[in-house]
Image 1 (cartoon, rainbow, N blue to C red):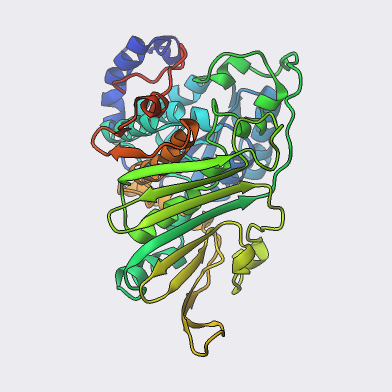
Image 2 (image 1 turned 60 degrees about the vertical axis):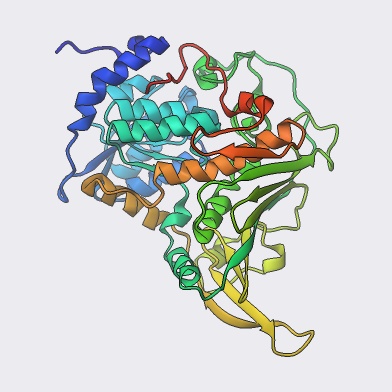
Length: 454
């Protein structure tokens, strides 16, 4: 069979659909790796989180790192050099994603691009027969998330989302505690993502660095002139690339909360917020936002701030020890209010505690149960490797990641249409509001469109 250049073939939506059919055979017959085989991986996008994840895999004896792909040659070559030194084996660098996916020797890709590229990079990997570890949040919008699920199922791919709390032993214990009825019926769940922040002023556009392919970096996002604030790190402030900290970081807590309460789809969603602390800031994302999600017998709220430096993410000294955070100032906590007690839980280690009624009026609540926690990156990566071999569904399967992301995407959509209450239809994954539905999916940009048929 003549080798086809995927980059040229995926230039149009029709080409992408044809490619999906063409590569279905190759991806469907991909073998399950035996215990003695080394799993060959590639890194797509080598920012801070991607660099950390790939180092974790590189330290494993059953994994080999073959490629690094990034739109910035300077950063990509540096990462390839670091991995080569770490592993003692040459790691190749490319700016072209198709080179990684064309390599039949690559078994899996770690997709750690900015959020607006997660869906397309994952779908293309699935079409090429690669398993995927995709960083959170898995999608930029509701529609793209469903396309990721469809691609994973169509091509029989393992797609693990980087919501590593799904592999934490203390989380399994918390879920069992609730399922066993020990907390009673949970009717209120509060999720917090409370962060520091500052005023932001957009700098002037500037010449694109010669090491950067900016058109490829923009990918599915609208075309614009290069601006350093829309690039490394700065993209968190703009809707074109991200849903802000409430999706990019708050997905961890929201995903765990949804798992804990055992819910799938909300009946309705509404959100309110604004740029209150920094009203003159040039970022598009609010610095305060509260989402309210209604389920059949439970309400979940998700609260985000970008002006609270006194709230603390759990330090590793606590995540990796038998300690609990100071709950009132834990910036990334979950609170579950049951009919028998309240459960306070920390993400990424930090554990959980359950408190009941105070034994003495005005005193502290009785400590009913507790579990210490640990940072679960190693367990999550182990689960991904195990599932590549066994072909079993991973702990943070893309369907679960998609459902959790939908909660936050819908909340942002409600905020963007003026805080309207949106009634959600899980069959179509749309709402009762035409303006809101226009934000459930974005217009693609050639040649970076996701086709209707993946």
